[in-house]
Length: 102
Image (cartoon, rainbow, N blue to C red; front, side, top):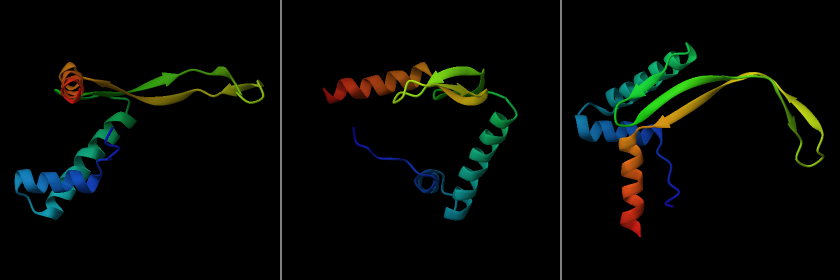
């Protein structure tokens, strides 16, 4: 594993290089896309990006968990969690990369 993380700045730089917008416009475009995704997810909507995957929010109910050190039961409150499901295209590209490395 390479261990690298892609940042907003790197995404903005990629948009700058590929699309030809100014650096400021590229940064604003990336922020605008991310903000729209966040807003849609906060409203409970699904965000689907073709050939990449889909993001959705799932409601998890109250349950009882255990403290792994002490074994004590601890209540886990209901919450909403973000779920990402990669597309088959993304899965295939990732797996093709693994077989190329072998």
